[in-house]
Length: 507
Image 1 (cartoon, helix red, strand yellow):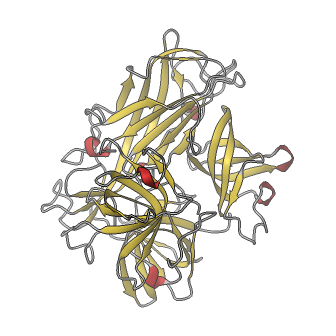
Image 2 (cartoon, one colour; image 1 turned 90 degrees about the vertical axis):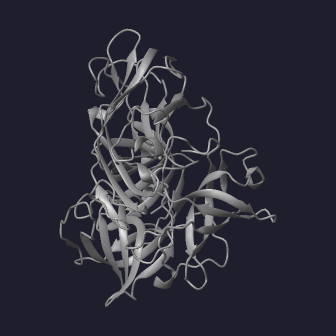
């Protein structure tokens, strides 16, 4: 799979508004997406810190309502057909997830209101005591935290009110600071100070596309019109346009000898990086990444434990993505047997990984890596077990294992004077390879990772936006491929595709 999103502890909701005066938008009630009149395609996209001693491994929440309130008239919904969207916040740090578009009439809007529900949380308890009487020390736990009366948030201060004018692009960025939102009892309070903040995006795009990524299953392909349609996991169908600037990633020879729109077929699962919103139901793709065919079963997750079994290496995988719900619950724990016959690869696309880094066998697997696993047909066993302690509830055998970019967050503690590498010291609140053997040891200690950069590495939050802009003692998130040392003993090197520095020292 091609970079689904980064492992995150910053939740960003991108609301990109582009007035084009084409299709219609509701202007009454909470709205939907399908009345007459000119309006604005509004896109929702997302990017995510926890109590001391708690490592957040997974945090999913549903956005059940989102609307703008005009100076006069009725609310305008920002969700396609008012359909709730589930977002895995912990997979969105340096990138965003595209959620929806809707038409918004040109007008002045005084406020924006968002409603959330059904948070799901998976943590590793690295503290010195049980948490909430349900999560013992040194264990991975699944929790369903409660949201207090702050489930609905209304934003009415800068950058709101805002006037939306026809033909003028507009976007908002909403940051979800989990360190403030998740309380000491692991309940969720969205209304705390600096829990959720909002800002306006630059009107002129700077750097890579900011509209985020969208996953979906191809429903139809119209090569003559340079378009295809995809349906998202939550049932929204959108038209995707491509042009001469669109790039194609990870198209296997079995699908097409060279990546291109004509290679796509109904049932294929793809990831689209959105370049712009052309109309409420039409997006322009900056890139299209081929993930799997309809006949494959593929899941993605973070390795949180490794053991040896009778059939080979056994990965304990925290599930973060699957194109279908089926037997693979997001936030669930899977036991994955990796036999000697499994194939290994690195999903680096056009990025050139520095020489000397290898991912060719099970000896190269380490805790902390993000991997995509193709499921060997007929091997899935789903026990359906539930509870605060999360033993593996799904097991299967892997046909192939592909290394995906991981996100590691920590402090830059050293910068190599040669101008190509740095040392990142991880922090316990952010998912990283912890220094423990097994789950029953809570003696977490920071891990130092060597981060290798290349001429292709993207820098965000620094000036200049290059390696020379980095400074020690900065809080940074690195997106890139995590490799074991040559001996396979511990994670030590990360090939950085993106380095994001957080100037305020928090997410």
